[in-house]
Length: 163
Image 1 (cartoon, rainbow, N blue to C red):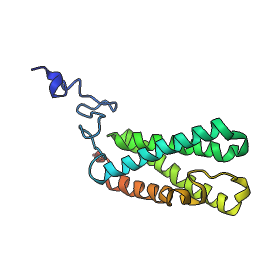
Image 2 (tube, one colour):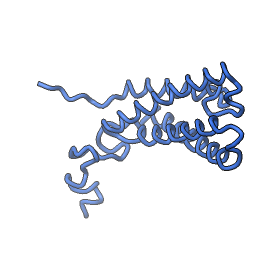
Image 3 (cartoon, rainbow, N blue to C red):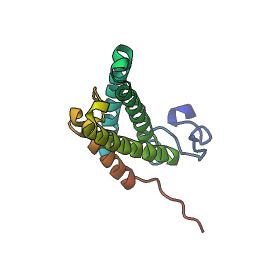
Image 4 (tube, rainbow, N blue to C red):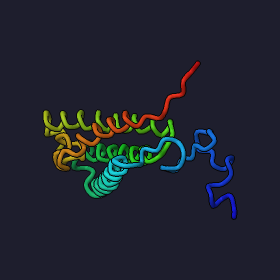
């Protein structure tokens, strides 16, 4: 049997982090967050990535001049959801750090856009994913980053102890 069938030789199983055995595939080596409730969280992020991308693409392609700020914010939300989905699904400390930045950016975006859209509705003649704190999506965009940050906190990569 070939060593490729069993994941390759130790040298072939080196992940992007450069550490032997630190495969970047979720569930293989490293610290995978794609287990248990993490799978559901990643799936929800994936759905939002697809929905926000489709919405932003349609809005920008068909009616950008009507509400350019709202449609650009929809595109930003789509990018944030894509980055969060991919980084949450990957193992390793770099993916963890990217996840924390993406999910924190999402939370700041939802709260900022939510406040602006409630305080100055004229600035948002058309809704974004984050308008009114995600009201159009059942407030999932407001709750999702909170759950994401809690999940990330509970599933931190092991810290190496310095002596």
